[in-house]
Amino acid sequence: MASKTRERLLDVARQLFVSNGVERTTMNDIATASDKGRRTIYTYFKNKREIYDAVIERESDAIIMRLREVVSSDLGHEEKLRKYLEARFDIVEETIRASTTSQIISYLTLDYKRLERIRLLSVRKEQGLFKEMIDAGVRDGVFDPKQALYLPQIHQMIFQGVDYCHLRRSFDELGMSADSIREAVIEFVINKLVVTKS
Image (cartoon, rainbow, N blue to C red; front, side):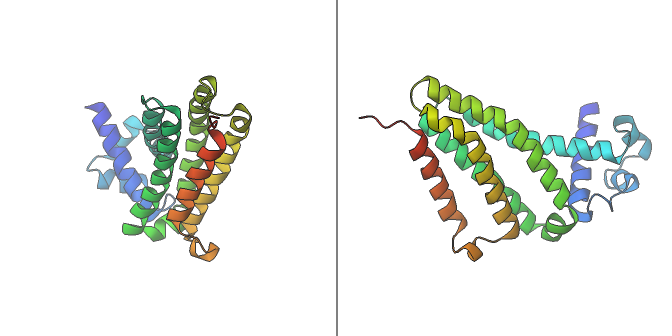
């Protein structure tokens, strides 16, 4: 019961942070929207900052869980890498699509800092997961060890650019589409990393 209440408070807080922005959301707002008293909120969280941090942590964990499912799958190394990259693109696209169908103004203005914190926390968690997947492919002779040394940094830079282009909707300015970027990145990474059999 306690964990359900905590999760409910986090769900409500997240919705309020998205629609109103973090600064404009009060503990009273969260209490009223969740049909709980302020005393109940303070049973679980010391202050709004602690709620905010828990929301960020939970959202970044949800992202990483999707990627972890791919890494722990029984797919071959090349297919696993392809699915991982596809999932990573899907995560960015779904986040932006959700914001455009509900509260695009709050995502891009009031709550940009929240999205950025989620992205940064996810990146830190993702780095180890991505390295684990690449190292396994190198050990089994599927991935080129020399190319694998550079890939983690390149991977992060690519997705930072993809995140930025989606947030700013700037693909058209670059003369590209989100789909063409997606396909080009996936094919480039796989072609560079996979050892060609002669």
